[in-house]
Length: 351
Ligand SMILES: [Mn+2]
Image 1 (tube, helix red, strand yellow):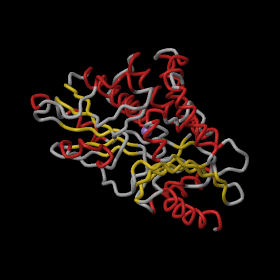
Image 2: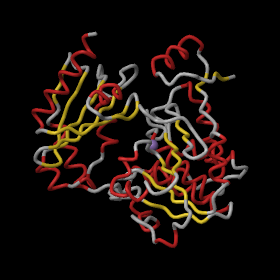
Image 3: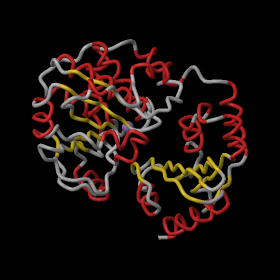
Image 4: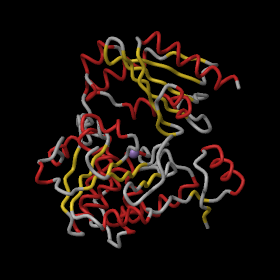
């Protein structure tokens, strides 16, 4: 038994679940999207810049399904493919496709609802009718229409789960390759099932099918968590040693300097293991990393546990993401950004 939520509000969602103890239902694909796919023989499937396993897994699995329906598909990404687990897929993507591959094409954007997040390919994508499939909290997305179908469900733990539902809605059975790619994306975004709750049994039902049909799970686990460099562990050491504690240990903060960035690059970042280590500390509710990526700009990443909604804090500064995982960029150096972040969180922890 499940309830269909009619509100996008996180707070209402939590209240409903606390009161009823029922499942969160993941939305089904809108008919607009099914028709959008049916009406066109050629698609450009694009994702966000700096793609992760969920983005790549969704794009590749959807391409496979659309090709089985007889469509021509080209995969676009602005890159860079820095994460170790996605590097082997880079050769299947282009930045801008050849003209002959885009005649009368339609675009499907995956794992981001803000076109800016597609990076350098945004202007190219703007020339085509465009659908969106995403699971991030979208502040200003439009209603689904036949010209611009929108399939967004922030309750979905991964974009691959929405692609899974779409493949089903297209009356296709998963192939082994699709099941593997969908599981790869699902387990990337939910930290190999660490971030789910007992309310997510619907997710396990989908995962069960992916597991039964796909590759060995140990292989997928190793492709996500193995293959790291020694430098990535040394960088982790630097970041751990700089950790500062605020609000009686409820918020931990650390930072990566411009020197770290130049020396180790983003390919040696391993945010997943860093966040996991910090959030496992007793009493910690928020972990915040500030990364100075150029002289006057920092990227900030938030992770939280339980009720703290870090997407709300990120949105104050024009950022976004999920309730327990969000981020933003801000002009300024580390000490300036740190000050702004502590001010923002002081109201969270003193309310
Ligand atoms: Mn995702």
